[in-house]
Length: 265
Image (tube, rainbow, N blue to C red; front, top):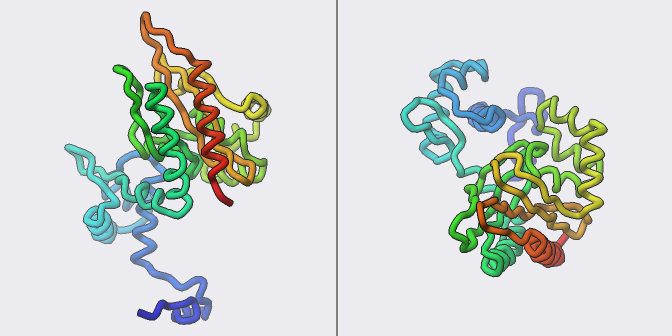
């Protein structure tokens, strides 16, 4: 089948192919982007109100998106949220496939040797996103599902990845953050923190999300010299059980160096 090029597309009313509209597609994308931005389930009525559309036209789009697996209904309510489908599509891109295919076997080896859980984390839309998890073999661990995320500045892995970026790239990664977080990124306090993390080369700090957990995280540095991802190991503090954080850090550094050396431009 012959693929259409831009020159094959019909002209818009003003003759500009670059502004050619597809209203139904745009409505569907507006719904997905809204739910991604608010970060919580919304009812069809709430979606229609926020997008200034009629409930009937939003209902039709929501029905199709739910049928195709892009939306999931919250149990016991009529509220809708993004499913994992967009995340699953995202990690199937060439860059996502390369990253996971290289890093995941090294994470599995690390977890097998150390017994510790490990999370592969990237930044997307100013949020951390867990791409993959290895479970280790300890009898008590902290595991989060792939797709789990937090605002980048509220996560140790996010701070680590941002620390290993140029100024321009850092702002680009955070362009979809809230205004408050963009201001926070430019503050002297955050700049000092990121500079300290970069100078140290890793991040060991109490979890910003889960109590009694220390995060140990190292960057996966690509050939461009910036962090493509981070591998984070959550160390659960337990009564009467000592964790050799220094040994974990050394092993994690080695895994991240090996992963970075295998990434291509």
